[in-house]
Amino acid sequence: MVDSTPTLSTALKRYPTTEALLSGKLASPRFNFEFHEIEPIHDVFKPMAREQRYDVSELAIFTFLQAYNYNKPIVLLPVVLASRFQHGCIVYNTDFHKELTPDMLPGKKIGVRAYTQTTGAWVRNILSQEHALDFETVEWLIFEGSHLAEYTEPPFVKRAAPGVKLLPMLMAGEIDAGILGNDLPNDPKIKAVIPDAANAGRTWHDKTGLIPINHMLVVKRDLLRFRPDLVREVYSTFKQAKDAAPVAPGAIDMRPLGYDKVTPSLELAIQLAYEQKIIPRRFSVDELFAESRAVLGDLA
Image (cartoon, rainbow, N blue to C red; front, top):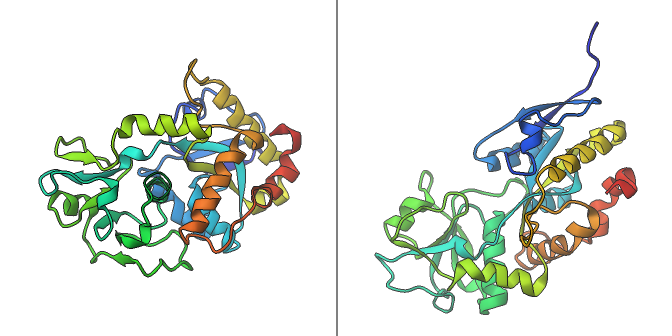
């Protein structure tokens, strides 16, 4: 007998809220996941944004906002897969700067993988909102372009020479500071630009109630259009996986799920993307979620 169960190609990183899915402990009787665990996960984002390579995918929120702006057939679901307090992600090399604080950054050269990188956008927001830095007074050096070919960086952004890497430039003192995420080195010479970075993120959350969203869940529009039942099942399955990894008492839920829980933090992401010239207008959360809400309804 031929198995007629649909298979959904899915690009996803392993987190506490996806472990049950990737390990096979949790599955749906209505479809099969065909998982693609690609490291680093950001290598998934360009092919998903440009050619919709997967049926279901993790995607950086600023990549999605640009994809939405350029009418790519991708639909956002209210599932946060990754977020992180970003205060400690802008660092400097003490071999070349005895001290480097946010008020010293005007005129400095800061490296970031891409201008549209989610971590970089959140760091610029922190510097602007909490330290009154005009980020256009900084020379931003990037090493990759946007995940969307249509986008052109602002004029205060410069491209590094081909083959040059961010971390070696930081270690050699060729840039004043660098923005790094999962690749942040464990080196005593490397220090955070933002004072008390370890506690600053929690303080910001306590004040705002928000989280800095990095990655969310998206599906191809054709899947939503032709198999809305499967999109509902995908969402339900991710919800079960999250329920299998409850947040510890007193801890912050860094991976919220559901429209009401996701909306406030998503609104801030939209605002700063607009302010930083990543998108040309300030989208509403309602328009971003309109397609998925029509299918998920009260389920989410």
